[in-house]
Amino acid sequence: MPNELRKDLRAVFTTRQYMISEDFEIFYYSDLHFTPTQPHSHSYYEIYFFVNGNIEFNIGSETHHLIPGDVVLMPPGVSHYAISHDPGKRYQRFVLWVSRDYYQHFRSISPDFAYIFQLAEEEHRYIHHYDTIAFNAFQSKLFEIIQETHQTRFGKDAKVDLLISGLILDINRSIYERDNPPKLRETAHLSQSLITYIDNHLTEPISLDDLAREFFVSKCHISHVFKEHLGISIHKYIQKKRLALFRDALRENGEILSTFTNCGFTDYSSFYRAFKKEYGVSPSHYQMQISKESAEYENRTSSVSN
Image (tube, rainbow, N blue to C red; front, side):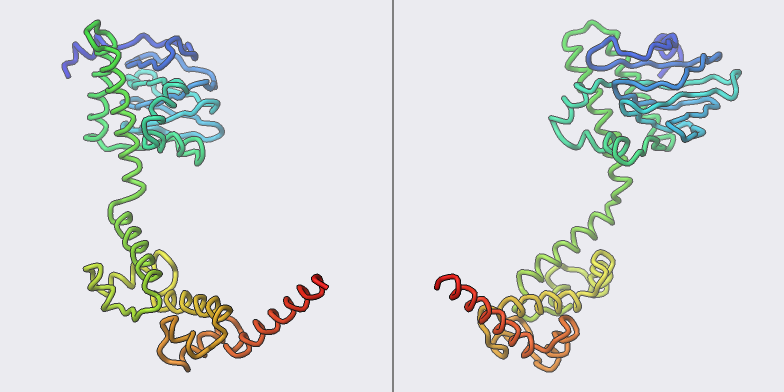
């Protein structure tokens, strides 16, 4: 964008810390002699785009030296202020104020608008850095918003809404995808799909070969993904789920040999060792406990009836 246009879009810095507009206010500042502000907070959200300068940004009790390309989101009620350590260096930044109601308007459209706001309010993650290309794209959109606010063309308000919502959504998308890389999302999806498949086929034979054919990935990859996300091997998970299934089914059936085969086990000795290791007693001992509990329950019921 031509420098002349950028000069036209500059705002004169004001120490005003309240909104006049109901929805948003946007400023492009480029100051050689920055007037420092005192620690303050807002009743609205402030999204701050740092372009240039030697600036120290204080948020609460923490101090951050800003780097060009930093985007800072300050929620309502959080104290902050900026200090310039080189008054002779031009201090350039965009500031976008968003009212609570305007934010809720976008959030009502989709919860995807809320990601960075929740990071700031719940995890106190206020600052996100962008490379030159990504940040320049934001600058272009910010200048477009400022230009549109200076227009009197038909559809101005609708256009501004679209531009601001697009900007906020782009920031949310970029941070979400940075926090949740595609590879991580894909492996999490595979892990959940494996769990669902196993749970639905517990009484059937399940092998790594079967899973590899079902999901079109290697056995090694399946083993690695499952262990990474659940902390145990697939074999151990299947065994635990089948043991729990047997334990519950035994209360209904009461027959060990038929129940253990119906729960996906094929070898009794392996099943016996696994059950005793998991629950501390043998299957027959557990069966006796069930019988004892059942008899005691019947006696109590009979006593109450009499």
